[in-house]
Image: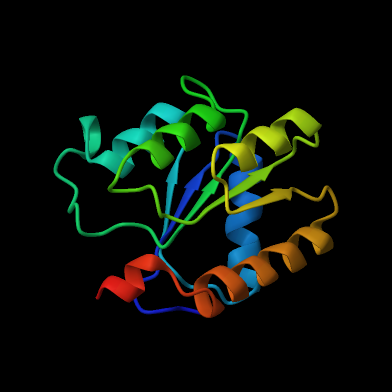
Length: 150
């Protein structure tokens, strides 16, 4: 499952969850390039080509951002707020992928402009299926604003 240059930005600080997500992509034949950043500050640097990523090609933007909420340095809700407040990224699809099932996190995520909120299933088979559906929808079926502008 590889749309033309549809890369994924995975913002995940837990190495076990990162490995699980990458394994689920592989198991579902999602071969899109995945860039992993491990905290909110690094995610913002990546997206806005700052800091360590200042030399990154600004035209190469991820097709999909998978964003955890509980992150070091800058939490996921703050990252989402910054994504939505900048013209360069405000239309980027952002899927919250988190273990949090707190009502306030769900509501805040949608209020700040998340496109979807997925609670990471604890069961691996459920997680594999969730990632399959996520890849199918967001990388193959969804028509992004970036595709329209081409």
